[in-house]
Image (tube, rainbow, N blue to C red; front, top):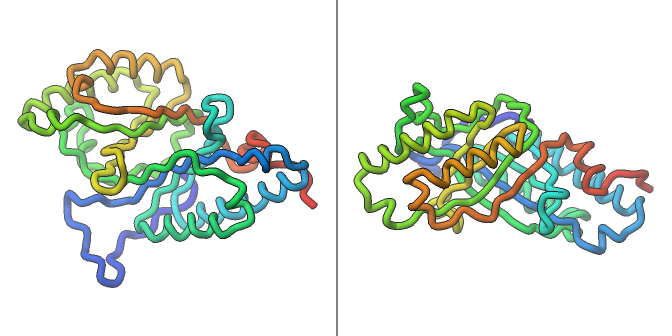
Length: 253
């Protein structure tokens, strides 16, 4: 991701984060250009693009930020902004800046998901230390696509003994391990948003991800998924390309 992570330090009256707590705040924000902006002249759209460019550059200076186009993959959204910060205020203050900017009223937030990184309850027998990672990897994967969806498990899942859940997760992990071109980022939303997880897969080939999900549907753990939609296929784009792709580039007045 672009930008840099802030060192996690307790601020004010905030208690130090204990082992097992959520660590980083993660925000997935999907936006659609309002019809009035789509129908505006090139100069007006370019001015809106310049404003959005400045806001997103500011986001990248304060937190990990990546941008994606969803043009051509969904009818209800045009772009995704993926942000990661050590403090929730960093995210909420940026979104307040967006709402108060000239481009804010011209964008419709079609979907929004808040989550946190957290150490997994389950061991990963195929990767030493993978279950202990509670921060998103800041290294650039270079993947062309991001596949994002919120997920909710059934209440019956949590009633199972942990050993039984681990057994089913071992199968789940083994299936995912066979698809080496796909990298997973699992974040947690318990008590923070409507879903329990937000899952984001990075990869270069949508067909490979399709095959992975098809195989996961047959796993035993899949029977305990209550909801895993909507699903978003997002194309990674640097900011200048993104603005052209969604129709916000041109000659500003």
